[in-house]
Structure formats: structure tokens, C-alpha cells
Image (tube, rainbow, N blue to C red; front, side, top):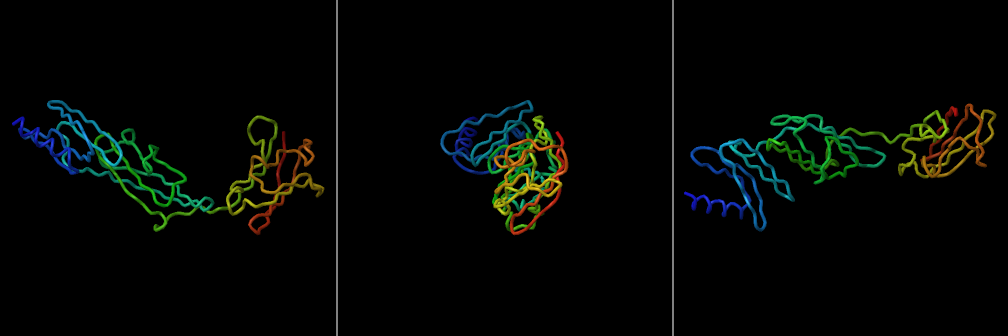
Length: 243
């Protein structure tokens, strides 16, 4: 019996298949394995033990009296296209069957992550594994799917507090660095209509309004007005400056 079992194991380790070893009517080691080169398999008899081995292009589960065959998870996804970056944000909203929240590992294009991933390319693989041996795997081409789109719009903050506390020290324009708006021109005026600051290719960091004049002098608290030209459009509004 031992020689026969050893022969079966040696054969299976050279193949790629789904199988189950049965001894005295007890499921010892259901597994899915794809092996290149040498490999070692161990089984546990008489106690519950589950081990999962992850690797490139393969996984293996083994244990005592595990269900045989491939056990799928059911996952629901929320997919959003960011029109500013033309990349995708994906959120796993639920995973059911053979899974609990603290028992799941997520892989996005082979990298370990969480239930949410941002900035994904159109062709993306998702691999979800439960510690109980259940698996969800899918490959998507998001370009061929109907997804929710996040518009690439500019959002202008209307408050700045340049006091060095790390909060609102810089006037922010959300999405101003998107390719659509990167070639921009920003002008700031005081309440009498005099230009106090201006710049091209505003990016919220290296070029940004921090409550100082174009000569680098701190501006007094008060209301200021902006005109932003970008993508052939003109935007205007006000900024409240308080230190």
C-alpha cells in the first residue's frame, strides 16, 4: 500500500491537475498543484490542519477531510474609471461563500493589497483567497465593460490659511495637474481688482498660491478673487485668506 501511494504522489507532482488521495475512506489531501522541478508534499491524518502555498502561477491546499475539488468564492466588484488619469479604481464590495472578512487575501495583478485598489490598468487580474482554501480569480479588460465614470472636473477650494500648521497652507485646485488642465494660467486679484499673484502651469506644489504677493510679501487677510484659464475654458471665483 505504501509503495502504491508513493508512486501515485510521484506521478501527480509531475503533472498539473486536480485530485484527491483517499485512504480508508478519509479525504487526506485534496489539492490543485502545478509543479516545475522538485517538490515536497506532506499530509496530516487525524487532526484538522489547513495549509495554503502560494507561488507564481500555482497554489496548493492540503488538510484533513477538506471538501474535494475547486471551491469558488463569489465576489461583487465596483469599478470606476477616473477620466483624469484614464485608470481604474476597483472595490470589492462583498465576498461570499467560504469566507470571512479577516480570512481573505487580495491580489491585484499579482501584488498583495486590500479590498480596494486604485490606478489599475484596463487589463487587470484579481485573485482572492480565503484561508479555508476557497478562491476567486478573474481577468478583466475594463475597456470592454460598462463602468461608472468619474468626471475630470476642476474643484476650487475657497479657503487658505497660510500659518505653517500644515493645514490649508496652500490654495488647492483639485485635478489641475491632469493632462487636460496641466497647461493652465492662474491669476489672483485683491478686492480692488489689482493683480497680486499669477503663474502658469499651476500644480498645487512647486507653483502654488500661498498667501503671498508676486513679490513674495505676505498678503493681508481678506477676500481675493481668481481667474483660471485651462483647456480653453475660464473659471473664476473667490478665496478667503485668514492666518
